[in-house]
Structure formats: C-alpha cells, structure tokens
Picture: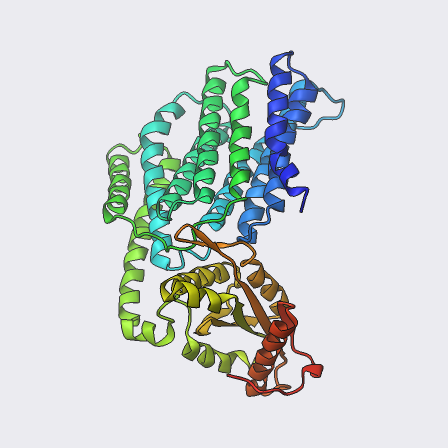
Length: 470
C-alpha cells in the first residue's frame, strides 16, 4: 500500500524529467524511445494499482488501450532511430497498435463512467444516438474537407480517416457520458485527459499532413499529459449518490436532424460525402427507430404498480418480496446466498436522524450495485439488511468486493461517516440442501461474522443449526 503514491506520481515525474532532458539535447533514442514511453507505461501501472473499487473491465480496457498506444509509439520511434538487417515493418506494427487504441479506450471509458449507472436501455440508446449523431455532423463538415487532398494506398487513406474520426468519437462519447452524470473528479479528469489527447493528436495529424512534423516535438508531450490525467481519474470515485440525468430531448433531436441532413445531401450529391460519414448517419437514424420501439415496449409491459411491488422504495433495489420470489428459482442451481448487515449504522441513524440514515442507505446501495455481478440479484431486505443471490462459484469473492466498497467514508452534508458490513455466505449445492435451510445457514453465518468481527463468514458445520430471522 505504501508504494501506491510512488507509482501514482511516477508518470508526471518521468514526464518532467523527459521535458528537461529533451529540451537540452538533440533527438536521442534514450529520451525518445525509453523515457518518453516510460511515461505512458507508468500511467498504465497507476491505473492498474489504484485501490478505488470500480468496474474491472473498464480499468483493463483503458490500460490495454494506453499499452497498445505505447507499443505503437515504441515501434514508430525504433523505425526512426535504427535500421535492421532483418526486414521488420515497424510502421505497420505502429499503425495497428494505434488503431486498436480507439475501440479499447472507448470501451474502457464507457465502463468506467456508466457501468451499473445507466441501467435503463433508453438511457444507453440516448447516449449512443447523441454520440453518433454529433460525430456524423463533425465528420461531415469538419473532417471531410481535410480528406480531399489525401493520397496514397487504400490502407494509408483508411488510417488517415480512422485517426481523426476515432479522436472525434472518443471525445464526444466521453463528453456525452460526463454530461449525463453528476460531475465528479473521475469524470472531470477523464474528460480533461481525453480532451488533451484529442487536441495533441489533431495537431500531430495537421503537422504530418503539412509535412512539417519532427520527431520529439514538444507538442508530443500532449499525448502523455492526457494519459496522466486519465490515469489520475482512476484514483477518484464517481459520484454515486445521484442517478443519471435525462437528456434534453432537443439534443437528441438535433443529432438526428444533423444525420438526416447528411443523408439528404448524400442523396442529392452522391460523391460529396465519403462512406465513413454516411455509415454513422444511417446508424443514428436506425438507433432512433430502435429507441422508439424500446420506449413503446417499456410503456406497455411495465406499470408503476409492478415496479413498486418488487422494488425497495428508498434505494431502488429489489425488495424482500422480489428476493424471496427469485430465491425459489435460484435454489435449483449452484450459487451462494449472501446476507449482509451493516455495522455502525444504528448509532449514526440514532444520533443524526432518519434523513441522514436514509442517505447513507442510498449511498451504500449504489456502492453495492457497482460490484454485484451481472445476472445476480441484490436486494434490501429491510432496515440496514441486504441480501444477494450470486450464481456460480464466486460468492466469497463477491462478498469481499461488497465489503471493500465500504473501505472509504461516505460524505453527507460535509461530514464523513464510516460503516462496515458483516456478511454471511451459504453455498447452494442443488438437491442437497433444502431451500429454507440454505437461508438459515446464510443468516447464521452473518451473525457469526458479526460476533467474531471477521467481516465475512461462510457457513460450516461447526456453526450448527441456530435460529434465523428469515
């Protein structure tokens, strides 16, 4: 744990060293291959070792994206400084690595910002529609003119189009996701990092197009500075107290109208826009129709009475009734039942009142939601007690992740509150344990975890057959 701050600041320290040494000498492979790319690698390490609990796939996606960019940078630099007797196409390696950066970065940023926060399909569709629509407009009226003078092989033209379009998609998607969430340090730093990277990349593309780019230019550090801000964002948690905001319908309407305008121009003047502009315009309109169908289907199949009957009114989680209903089907397969009881909640609730207690429960629910696996059920059983049905064999690991979410304090009305949780696990083996006994075992294990202050206890035979509240 003590090494975390060292690695967290290693990237910015290395960048400072590079800037000082690089400006005092001519291009050198030690600086421009080793030191330059070490900054990006330190940023990757910083992301991977951050102790903030969040979506694992998002963290891996962003890390892989920066790592591949670094591989491309190293390959490009080597081809500039060295010649080899063996034919190795370093430029091709660099182009492939740079190209893979965009899908991985987009996936990682999306998971890091909106995983388990935009849970409704309509909100996710709105995000994609606005991103594609604005990207279409920008690509059509800003990037398209710049593409007219591009020459070279088909692959070279493809790359010349891919990089600016990839920058635009990544920037706009990040901007849209930040705008629909309450602002947090995570989202602000991610957006700042992506913005700096995009500006640096566009400037590099501009210099390359003019034929005046020189290896080791001071503006190259813009890429690295962007990565540093991105890595720093993973040391801050998202704002989990509030839900996603709805889009202003005018934004989605403008995105849709812009895409329609591009298609209309393409019909009247077929050669005016290249295919890379027409494709996202078609996708935007198609997704708009899909969204309409999803909205109609949701309105038809879900009523307020159905939601309230199976949802906890305070936290928005499943309630006890939903938990018990799903448990009947869950007990037929392999998995773990988790019973969770908050430690330290009652004194806070008694001293500061039910309003503060309710806000704590809401924040606890949001943290638990972020780590509960897909396909599992998380429910509030009542008071400060929660339950989870986890399919498969990872019940204990899920319990560890749930407890880890409470490792840092909650902030309410500028005051910090700390809670812990006692978790009891009972593993279900189909056909061997009656369903009512499985619930009792999880409850008994939870009481043992609370009594022993161990935090988590998995039921074992020595616990016996004590009573249960369920």
